[in-house]
Length: 147
Image (cartoon, rainbow, N blue to C red; front, side):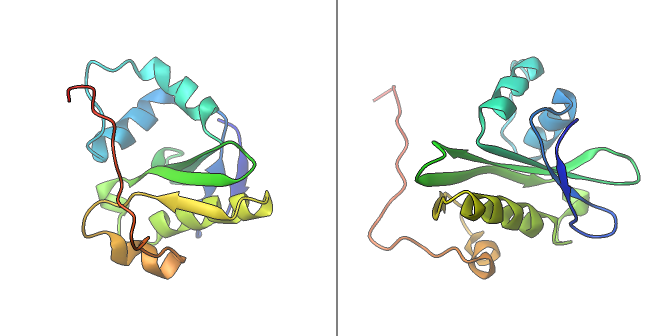
């Protein structure tokens, strides 16, 4: 576990990391509904290293990851926040907002000012106070090989 610690509160720091316990990250992805049991947790090390920024919120009492989020970027122009999730028992405590704020701050410090994300339905109100706005006239699209 490596990274610069950025305080989120007295008990839950956010760290920018290049590696983390894959089992803990898999647990977070399960909590987000994104994990399939046939996935190999060992592959998560590539996901973490391949991200432009990878943030983990840690419970200081247990040392375990309780939230995560990441940015995908070329490091020059655009950044996309993905995979924001906080364990259910820690939600509504400001941890998700701290993760997003940390990622946005680091992107801006590195000259990346176009920062986008695709929010799940009915989560827009979470992102509005963090500076995000709907992109009027744009629609998210997803490639599907079955069409």
